[in-house]
Length: 309
Image (cartoon, rainbow, N blue to C red; front, side, top):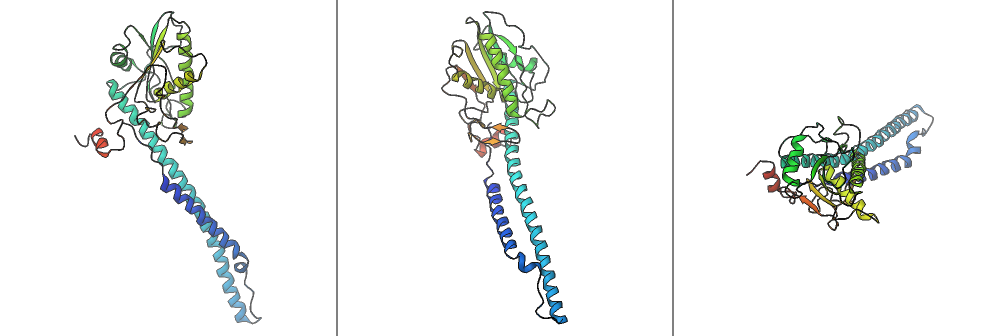
């Protein structure tokens, strides 16, 4: 299923309101700074002096309280702003994690991270290759994954194609810190470069063809590569290249990165960069699981979570 990233408007508004309160506190403190710093005695007698001293103490305590209130306001505003970012980041992480789980279920089981075949070696001329990429936290799809992809998506539609695993980082720091320190944006950028190089080598011979399989993060990699080809003056021929995407965050029909186009989460470097181009010249099949297109319906979520039948 796709998840909608909730924009934390209430937290943002509260932080803005607190900024206004902080400005008011500072203005009030500045206005009374002189009168409350010290109070002159009305006369030279001991009673007047004692009263002046008492009011002076109150004034100094007021200044101390105002300073503490200002510090508290500043820290509270910072915490609210941080909470807003954390809320959105958590939603994004949950969404990407859910897409991973969903795609793994779709492909028929749990996957490990063992290497199968690298696509870094030379490719034979006149070949037909299916480049298979993993998803977030799966840089090296194992044999179970590759076999499922081949049986479900490659062989029925691209008979005779040789399936070849393409290593991509598939990181989402800090949630994949066991794999490295790449943020989502950095990982996708490296993945695009790897895919571009593999396709350039494969399609340099007009007799060669290729199909790209991606899911979750690697579907975003494929989306970015499609856009790159569409912007080139001399891109590969559409007759040479096709794409198959599952668990696609950029699904034009409700993908999580298709929603809130332009939103950016800087802490984890996630850019909501819109839909996989529906007008792409390259044949593109996007497989969508049940409930992907109805993320906001409560009953859909309950059924997908197994709470109701």
